[in-house]
Amino acid sequence: MSTRTVRVPGFSARYSSRPAVVTGLLALLLLALTGYALTVGKLPVSLGEALGMLAGDPGPSGVDYVFWTVRLPRVVTALLVGAALGVSGAILQSLSRNPLGSPDVLGFAGGAATGALLQILLIGGGALAVALSALTGAFVTAAVVYLVAYRRGVPGQRLVLVGIGIGALLLSLNRYLLISAEVDDAFRAAVWLTGSLLDRSWDHVTIATIAVTVLVPASVLLLRRLTLLELGDELSTGLGVPVGRTRLQLFVVAVGLAGAATAAAGPVAFVALAAPHLARRLLRPGGPSVVGSGLVGAVLLLGSDVAAQQVFPTGELPVGVATGVLGGVYLATLLGRRWSRRSVLSG
Image 1: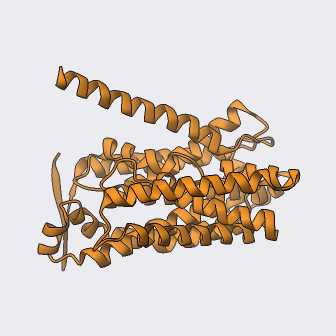
Image 2: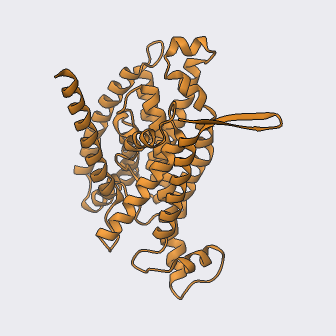
């Protein structure tokens, strides 16, 4: 992998050519996918009309309202939620030093689901209230996981095991809440639990925008420390990294991104798990790639939503179903390759 150096007065930086090129290609793919997503649906529009409406021009009769209140919030939510999940998964996999370390596995998505279910089934309220309850549930669950796993630090293996255990408890609680609820409330909650981009509003966009705008730059600033943490606590300490404080800061960033993503679109499966793996394979960086993982996560979620709309033209298939299918196939393929590789080596 070739490296190059950029120098300007008072600043110099080195970068590798492959990650830079692949990141640019991912950005172009995401831009093209976004343009296509804005033109398809029950009321298709041309790309020129979509760009014109974004520029402030009035759209065709009836299209303008659908574009601004239905289609655009859905696409923007998909972009932001996918990016947030990708970055969150990359941080958690690096912190836990485990390829399965994602918000889905560690129980944070389950905690967000519990908060949302309590709001929907017991308290009531609109979409914003459900989203805020989901975000609160994610942070409460993360605090419990962190405190239980803490023993003079938070080793990755213990973090994963504690997260799996608490996630299983929350899954049982969520099922109990569903079966004890009224039919209408249970149906609404079940749709939310699947992970969906249907009926997204600008309230959901606002929640995801705040999280991505604040926390993604924070993850980039902490990226060097995150890379050093992968070398081990002793070596990281020797290199001047405050291990405990840095791990806690990164943990809060990852949970905030995962919680906001779940609050905006429900617990979307497998994006946070698969995006960092794909980013590492494509970019081949020297350490975790939060920007690449965010781009891959956005491509995965928006692409899955567009694909679901093509298979089901009504557009009512929850995107969590599509990501679950794709993620399951990817995970099975990944585990199968590792198993076959170990079998060859042992044979």
